Image 1 (cartoon, helix red, strand yellow):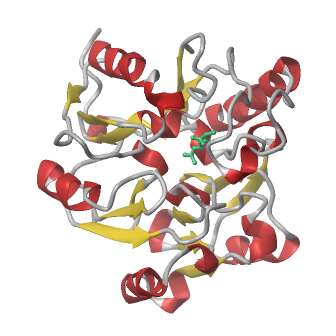
Image 2 (cartoon, rainbow, N blue to C red):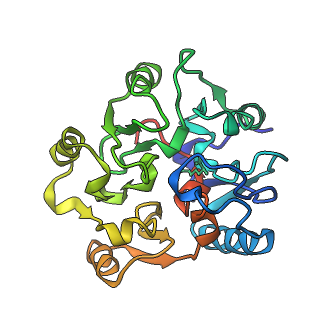
Image 3 (cartoon, rainbow, N blue to C red):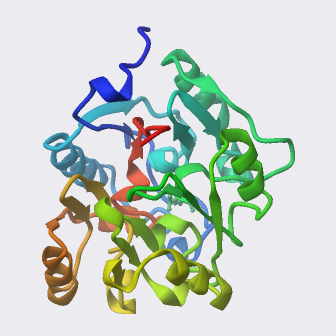
Length: 284
Ligand code: ARG
């Protein structure tokens, strides 16, 4: 496999998606999955995933990772790990149900020319589900913990990647990964649901994001996974946004595209969870 093109030579973002071949809800490891075991169909989930892939492919190069049998949540590519330049920090899943994904991700990223950079042993970390780069001028990393990833992952990532990491404690079990309730957008805008965070973490967000750049999401949008958005330039792809949220995003210069992903919401995920940016620049 050729070396990935250096970021500065590339204009189109690169996004990884993992095929939905084996997707289903076959266990319960978050509140969304309750009552949905064996409640999805292969046909409907394939159709929704295809619609997302086609939409993302209009604004990015999509790379498809083959799925592994017996790993129904591997479709949530965001949880494979964290990409930073040519480095890949593999996830260490909290629950046994997802640990089987780890060797597949390790192999795929190694095969595609990434340097595998491991966190110290014994730290749970669920990749770009919990670690999100600021898309403003600074290269800081927001890192969610409290449900899946350990708090210790934040300083460990800071040391490993030599970047500023801002830990945010997640307080509502429905919003168990940072990307379910928080989304850094272009130009420093930040989409987030305040109810998902503890008070100290909300203060951290408010200290770093100026009021004019905060796009506060209300609960009715948050439970539709509006924060679980894929931002590519001025395009924001998400499951659903109310008219009010859509007009606030448009006022900030974004174009909102809805792709229905209810099959995946039964598993606790939507647009952002199903993707992983492969071109996270180190010095942007
Ligand atoms: N069923 C999956 C889990 O609970 C959903 C993961 C969603 N991924 C995300 N990045 N939020 O692990």
